[in-house]
Amino acid sequence: MYKTDTWQQKVKLFLIILGPILVTQLGMYAMNFFDTVMSGNAGAEDLAGVAIGSSLWVPIFTGINGIMLALSPIVAQLTGADQKQDVPSAVRQGVYLSTLLAILVLIIGFFVLDPILNLMKLESEVRSIAKDYLIALSTGIIPLFIYNGLRSFIDALGATRVTMVITLLSLPFNIVFNYIFIFGKFGLPAYGGVGAGIATSMTYWVTLLFTVMIIIRVRPFSTYAIFKVFERPSIQAWWNQLKIGVPIGIAIFFEVSIFSAVTILMSTYSTNTIAAHQAAINFASFLYMIPLSIAMALTIAVGFEAGGNRRDHAKQYSYLGIGIAVLLSILCGIAIYAFDGPVARLYNDQTEVIEMTKHFLFYAIFFQLSDAFGAPIQGALRGYKDVNITLLMAFVSYWVIGLPSGYLMATYTFLGPAGYWMGLITGLAVGAITLFIRLIYVQKNASSTVNATKSQ
Image (cartoon, rainbow, N blue to C red; front, side):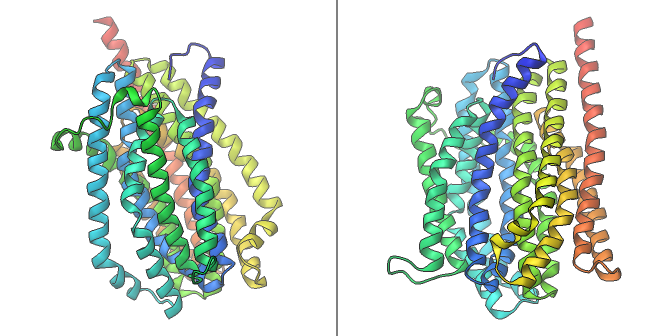
């Protein structure tokens, strides 16, 4: 990151930061994308099992990962305020914290996995695949959480191309591992959907290895000597990160878990309906990586400018990111409408599943447009370290408005399972509007504070 004065400079720098983040996010989600597509080609039961397993895992991962994302504004503001000497300790404490959180997730998962799956009305084969998929995936949780903490450090320095390279190096491993374990190659048995969990876990370990090697050997990361000194864990440092990270994580959890809750509620429908829903939500979530990447870039840019008390510049970055997100969302909506058939056939070759997937994809056009507003605004607010009110807004928008309205429309109208998608659209739209109001308030309050300081 560096200071910019004109809009042209800001657009150039923002795109330089955004491009690698976008490739990285698309690459990381591509692992889930290939898990789903390749599992679907193994059978509808495998696709449904991975759907249920992912629905339980993804909100947990993204929610906990939100705590790791707190390192981005922390490091960005430290560098923006010329306090680089405090960065290494903050990163090391983040690694300690991420390891502890991963262990807690494993312990809790050991006790609650069976009871949760038993509450769902699943066919026995689908339940078995979902459970074994999650068990296989769990062996990679610790390296995944550590990687995301280290990635926040790398991205906060503006070196987003590095995480892009790491992801692009790791992705082929995931595809090869999927091919081997899902379909049974090189003398190994065909594990089907469970093989996707094995492949993803192994990929997480490869990704962490690449990341550690780069931080140790490549400048400017090597100058911070992250792994040369290991001070004692600091409860105070953890608390400082948790104060920012927990609201971020819970807010992300509320948003992501509503999609998972819908998938779980759809377990009352047929296996083909679950498979079609998972196919459509998987592709829509793949496109969600665009506004999410813009949000992450905004956290870095806004955090850097806010840390240096350049509030007008932080405001300009906020609206720049929102504008880019909306434009790209419109283009994605056109693409979904034009190519819904080919997209649906990527996941499964059964006629009923394909037609239902196309139907769900139509609704995805509208809620990804709402995401184009909401996600970047959340990213900008994180740059200001404004996270608590955002948490409350996310809960109300998604769980008080979105999910109940979806249930009512699915149960009491002609929409059927598509009613849940209408609920998602409603929740995301309300969230986007309330977040925008909050952003305006924060920007106005920040400008007033800076002006008052200057007049003293």
